[in-house]
Image (tube, rainbow, N blue to C red):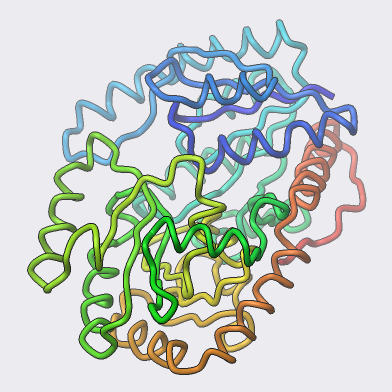
Amino acid sequence: MRVLSVLHHGGFGGPHNRNMRVIPLLQRQGIETTVLLPDEPGNALQRLQDAGIDTIQLPLGRPRFTPNPVTNLRFLTSVVSESDAIRRVIRERKIDVVLVNGLGSPQGAIAGKRERVAVVWQLLETNFPSLFRRGMMALATRTANVIMSTGMAVARIHPGAQRFGERLITFFPPVNLERFRPDREVRVIARTQLQLMPDEIAIGTVGNINYEKNHLLFVRAAAEIRRQFKRARFFIFGGVPTARTDLAGKIRRTAENMGFRIGKDFVIQDPGADVARLIQALDIFWLTSRSEGMPTSLEEAMASGLPIVSVNVGSITEAVESGVNGIVVSRGDSRAIVGQTLRLIRDPMLRARLGQQARATALACFGEEACAEKHAEAYLAALAHNEGRTIGVARTAI
């Protein structure tokens, strides 16, 4: 079987990372994958090629969150010609299945449908505006043979997804469970690097600076924690994209105005390739996002044995059972974040128990092999549906 995986941007993010982890495992099952990237700046091409993954580029537009209608009109007018270019790739590479990574890559679905090959369309996030989701889902329900979704909660906000029944397959993004695991020695090294004292509580998150991550909520909650517990320090492990330097400046100024010493009490640091090590320094992991699908950073924190305090967005409650393997509060609820975090600070045994259960959940649900199996299942179901056959695809609720 040959799969064409169509991605909608050139930066190395969640879908690109997932492709890099899953593709080698699928290859062992006889599933060969070519990744198609848009011809734009970014590090995804080099990283995928360095991993030995067959990767090509084409000029592909994508929708933008902008009030300027000309930008997205230009995208819409280019969809047909770009789909034709993908059709040529499908023919040349003898593709059997097109995998569409998110709503921002409709060209791949159109090309697959017109070439009469199977189409698997993935729903990965919840941050697209409602009108855009409706429009893209109208296309998805007409072109896709199978829909994959990062949890049922994500599927539910995409109109028409649940009508796919057994052809709606849910999955968790994969985590390298060997890299992300509790390790006392690594923790000591990481805390030494960050100049953390033994009695200090380190609270942090992982995610590049952007509006969806809602780091300003992180700052507000951190300031209240600091007011009540002076030995807390806060870390945002994430890069600052060029387009978000103003936002990063605002986050730093807000933290300073609330009494933090930037670089000391409150740190924004690009972790590079050191996430698995630096996250070990934390005592509590926060997720404060406005929107998510199923964030890999939260899965990695759970795999690392950290207690979680997360807002309820996306499909997070399908992985985190509040009070059992983490704590979930209402989205945007700074007071609840503070209250639950203070509870964890005061109860080391509770922190340990939640962290142990988080690790157990990760071992059961987040492995790369499990994610690869979900993809293989989706491809086979899509091929069968495209050929007018039916196969026994079990309903896959997480």
